[in-house]
Length: 607
Image (cartoon, rainbow, N blue to C red; front, side, top):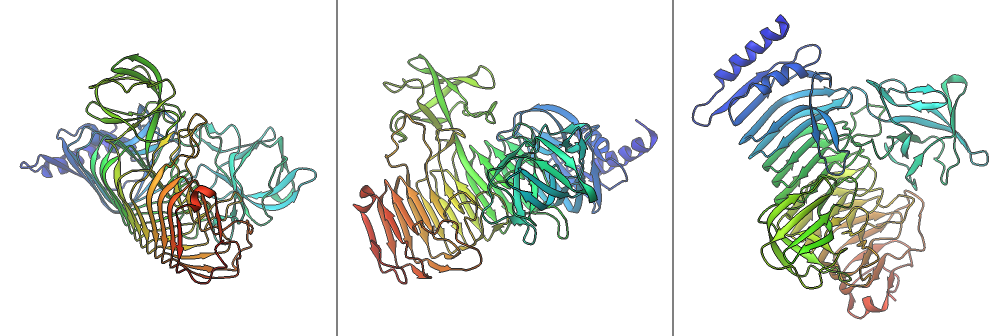
């Protein structure tokens, strides 16, 4: 260790000793910004913590963190890529961790995982700003397209971005030797509003070759199903196998989490990711690109994501924009029965490649058994032994005998690890995908938010296929929210979309989600679809004010405002509509049997 770092570290040890409070055994470390890479200084300070409770206090300023001297650890990260990660802030097995940022700005470089909290009893992080010096995206303004010949011309962004044209290929981000093997996931953005372009489709880009043209223009030779509009900003984030390195904050097997006044301008995955964690609050946090920045993307994936959490989750007074995926996704995990080992024991299989290594169940957890062809949560049992075979398979032994006729291909869901969820006072807009995706059977409350979405704004989709994210909802209130300019993706969506996706072995007509109330919301929409529901028992749509706008052309003018399939006990009551659409109701025979429509105003006739 050189003299300068040694001197700094001695000062930090002094702060540490002075900050130790004997009653609670909490160590306090005060850190000041210094020129250059702060990673080795921070790492050495963290490695010398001797107590189980720690408080880090950062003086206001700018701190740079590079991966060169970061701690390396193999990490399982759900919905990201597993592997050896360079971690700047790693906290494991602490009774409590407190971080006071005082408005400090953390600038990360290259492939780093900023924060990981594992098996911590209490976590409180406040007043921080996170960003990357160079984002892991490529973007350019669309100058011209030729659909017949199959090319598009882009004027690439250069200042603040990193890429290289080599051997007729774009190599990006070209940082510390890392490049994506292809442009990969690519999407067009509206340059003026910094949101996904109206009617845009996701695409996977693999140009045949890229040609250098005069005046810095690049010509991408590639036949596309949908071409981006001239003047739009085309953004690429690389291939799916490599473009989710790590979230800004990963919290696993922890409890009592409080994040407040944290702003994330960029991350190499999600903003906040929680796995098997209980009691979480995210308050007054922001995810968006900096004002005045040329960037159109903040986080590469979801703003917030909760996998198999429990207790109470609260997101309040937050602003999430410019992400390349959902504002939030709350879900459990379905696993598949691989083999019945004996009358108390099964071997289970994690199905999605981004679930590998995920802890589905622990000793004492209650598990639901879901047996084909019914998707209903049927019998339940308690886990008494967990034996991990490898990252894909585990063996679960249960207290009582397994249900009769349990078979390979049936599904298990963890009953214990489900949360209540509340979102209020938030703004979520100008990003790819859905505002909120919800899959917990416990109470859900969505109130007093401002929503605008590329895809469906509120999305319910438990699925025993592809993502294997459980499960069915049973108690939902969505009220007093403002929905404006939703479902503007090229693919058909709705403001409220309820659409379970179950494998072929399951009954595709059996009821799934239950007790959803959509009340007293204000909706301003350029298109028709308001509610699109499949396999719901108990859906109340009441007191909503809907206004047709002329801000954008309709994408699906023949769609109905209300569309019900395989539903029961649906009520459409006392809603008002100001507009000219005549496509009001589409409902199949089973949905019409117990459909109640009354007191609605301004609509064409319900038929």
